[in-house]
Length: 360
Image (cartoon, rainbow, N blue to C red; front, top):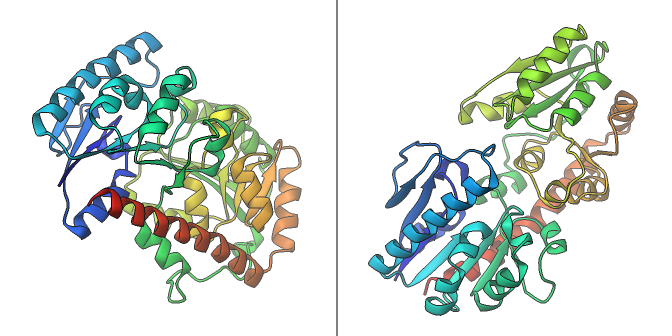
């Protein structure tokens, strides 16, 4: 048995592939990772296809890039004669759909983690869903955007080791007794990819120069969002804000622990409304309540389980955060947080059983 794991991007930007390969390693199944080296990172893997491709490139260039990558994929798959395929990302699944249905019917997994071109090619993607072995999605919100007649299984963007640690009684991270930091202050942290300038600016302005709050933006900016935020802070003389750029992944736990709330307030658009972000999981793992957008999948979880504040706008944000902190009950928060994570653990158990069955 040998499995091909097909990635739509660099390995660095597809950490979810480890969810599969960790299982393959444990059960002794051989596999190759094939990836699209868009950033010229030259990461170690069995096969890579190199072409510079950025998120700001036009749709024609991006489509042409994926078409070329699809030709490379088909050539490689024919050469290696894989028994099974894990196809990550709807864009490459669309481009090799005829090949998959003709040669791998019932022998491929479709792994879906972001809205993409399948929204414009839904009839073709519907056929792929129908002829796959399993259809994995990383958020229940995606069911709003996919054919209702297909069956889906959850595959969370989270390490199973971290998930098990988070729900264990021996966890090294105790639940917070209270949310106020030393001197009665609270820190709102935005970490990772700094995008969605308007929403981040609204949060920063809503808490600007308030003695009880500070905001931090740590990570790389996309399309200049972090630069524009710095310029806005300087223009409006906002002093209770901290900026830092790139950080090492191993530094993330320490940086998150220094915060009170994690900011995942996103604009209202379908891709954001339906996805579960990395910050969503970090909020749960590190016991840092989230600020998220109301009437989205993340906002629904925040309200249902009391694990954060769901807002429509940043107006009156300081009052909402103070009210959440004033009524914060550590034991209730921990119980509801663990309840949600246990449901994710159940999802993983089903996912693992499916992957093991697929690998036989």
